[in-house]
Amino acid sequence: MKFPAASELAQSYKLWALLKVETVSADKLIAIGAGYIFGLYLDADDGVATANILDGTSAEGRIINTLSCPTNQTDNHEPHVPIPFVRGLYIDIGENVLYVTVLYLLARDLDLE
Image 1 (cartoon, rainbow, N blue to C red):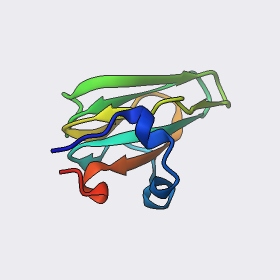
Image 2 (cartoon, rainbow, N blue to C red):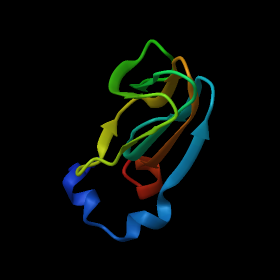
Image 3 (cartoon, rainbow, N blue to C red):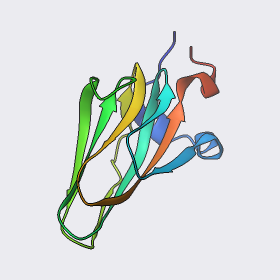
Image 4 (cartoon, rainbow, N blue to C red):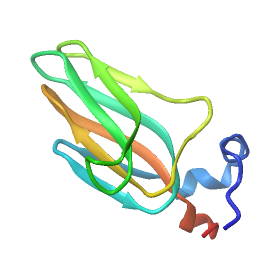
């Protein structure tokens, strides 16, 4: 599998049409297989909100990012370089989360698998 460097993907305008957006309010398997995360957004309810973003197909995967924000606020995480995942993309919702939105791209959509 030819897997380009994340920095190369960030500079490609073609990929923006391939981006997927998913918003969840409970634990969920978003994707199976390799890809990249381009943005993460956490919206808190009444209390400090947390969510783990995992490389894997369940809550047993490897944590690649943890989001946290104060009561009634939003944590926006837009990395300068896309965050790669290999096995899958799983969102583990913690306490006081209204929702998590993730912008991602699958390697198979770029014919990289």
